[in-house]
Length: 336
Ligand SMILES: Nc1ncnc2c1ncn2[C@@H]1O[C@H](COP(=O)(O)OP(=O)(O)OP(=O)(O)O)[C@@H](O)[C@H]1O
Ligand SMILES: [Mg+2]
Image: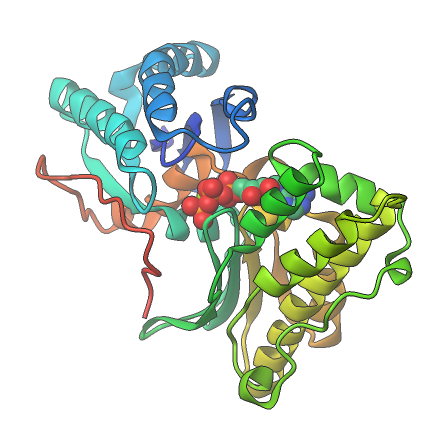
């Protein structure tokens, strides 16, 4: 019989539980998104997020096991996100995982949310990225370019201000397009003409030209200035915003691929669902003849399947956590 790993993700505002086998196949997944609740406030309210996780986590588990026709005793391990994230939200997942483990004796694995995003690109794929590989984590809380090598994981560069997803959300809020901003802007931009608005070329000064850092606050301000005009061509403005943001991302990736030999390019996180970014990454990986790993669209945003997948190596080497497992609220860059 296969080994099934239960993944529990509650680091932010999605409650998600999934079953994944050790071949990285997703057997079942159940997610409740709180987007419609938090969109009333234009952003995430941590206490409401934590309360909703409590309301949903066990009903989701029941419905997942029923659908997969699997009982708790069939599980081989329980993986749960422990950091980084909103501490109240994380604690709900960690508490649930420890409770199930205490009642059943099934071993626990604590998961770093960013490692889980990286693992999302392996879900339902036959192969894994070979080391060394380059990874871009581009999400609501992070924009980091990292190297994953045999010797360890190193951050080449990260954002100095907003994360890319945060920039999408803030621009959408200023333009009154709703929350979250990424999917709306992505759709609008497809109908626009980016050349109608002149946006800044980001971080081209001598100081930053050859670095791996990101910054999107100047782009946000430039977009805000155009939004003050009366007759805005919104699809074109959003296309211009998005183009400028992804031009910087692509430039950084090209620079990294030019100067190092990587066996794969792994692009993950909520923003990796973006159609323009996906097209750009396809072109770049083709140009450098590098294997590209992008998650399937349903695994770009936070989900329990990637949490379970990230636990597979620890499960195979029997590196389990004990009951001191705890949540950590860190928003820090965890690598390097
Ligand atoms: N098609 C898209 N284009 C651009 N951005 C998108 C798209 N779809 C979702 N996003 C953005 O992805 C972000 C959410 O991603 P994710 O769930 O990975 O972030 P998070 O969990 O809040 O942050 P982190 O993983 O860094 O802790 C939001 O900012 C959202 O606007
Ligand atoms: Mg995330």
